[in-house]
Image 1 (cartoon, rainbow, N blue to C red):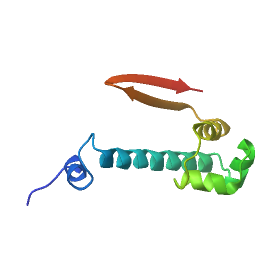
Image 2 (cartoon, helix red, strand yellow):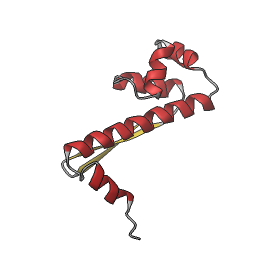
Image 3 (cartoon, one colour):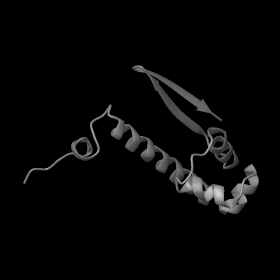
Image 4 (cartoon, one colour):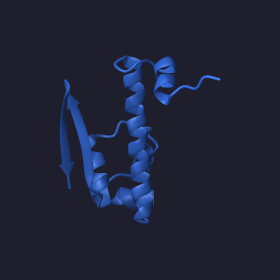
Length: 105
């Protein structure tokens, strides 16, 4: 029985790297992971969605949507969430084979 790597499966069923379908998949995956990170940090801080929303000036529903990747939240809102959670933020931006690393506190 032949086995396949996860990358081979993604190439076959989602599309190869560089295709529009693969880019959409990877973007959605990153947003899902971001939402999970927010949910995990919120729970670690023993905050409800309502309490976190109050800290940054949004309603509980907005926090729920961010955690469950149901909205296109503004980057500023995401930063506010992590700041309210007292979390260090790191992200990478890749431009034409160059990598720019940015850290915010």
